[in-house]
Image (cartoon, rainbow, N blue to C red; front, side, top):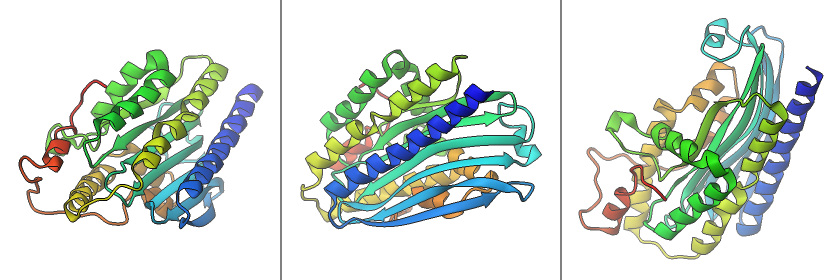
Amino acid sequence: MMQLEGLKTDFHQHVRELQESITREMSSLDTDLKLIEDPWQRTDHAHGPGGGGLTRAFTGQIFENAGVNTSCVFGKIDPQFAKHLQGSGDEMWAAGISLIIHPRNPKIPTVHANFRMIHQGDKFWFGGGADLTPYYPYEEDFSYFHGVWKKALGEHYTPMKKTCDEYFNNHHRGIEMRGIGGFFFDHFNSGHTQEDVNLVKHFSRHFIESYFPIVKKRMNEKWTPEDEDFMLHRRGRYVEFNLLHDRGTLFGLRTNGRVDSILISLPARCKYSYQYKPVPGSVHDKMWGYYQPRDW
């Protein structure tokens, strides 16, 4: 048990360090970036101490709105909710980092990532992943993003990519992914705690490499009102997924998490039009065809 407690502390420290590294990277690219830093505390289901977190909300010229959040929560949880988790009992501990970046320029993709460790009763497990939501059909960017994760994940890439394709999907619209995927895993536990912690830390260290070179490549490109309109409509689909299907949203709300920190994943602006479709034959119509599972 003492070893597990040490690993939990180590993992929490790692996600805090990763939060710092991502913050520095964003600040170096967007000189107009403004940060609201909001440390918060929570009470558990029994109204006792329940841990908390550090929310970082960003707005700027390159990054229209973004959240890079860490948390470490613990204590009693709703017994009915506890039944839906993997462990035993009605106490849990969870630490992790969750981020979402919505750029202003439609040539730059939106990105989401999270990495977490959870302990409940006699079990602990890991979850997380990263996925890309582009608005312009730069296939070389999509191949680059997946290429970084192929190298980082090794043998885990193929099954975790498949899980991502199936999960980040607006199932109420048939097969329509919210982006071009990435990788996703949940309830991961190989039985070797130290190895699992090291592996998930290894995954998470590749986030900066997977995304920010794309930002640097596209941040000065021009865009049209049509590009922006398409981006806003696709952001609307992003909202649909996060509010209807996202497990992280439900988990945060049902464990008495910070509501604004949970919903920071939503874009500052989005659009909905009845039966929206891009103009046939347009570059945006081409982009629409990428929101399906495919090999990279």
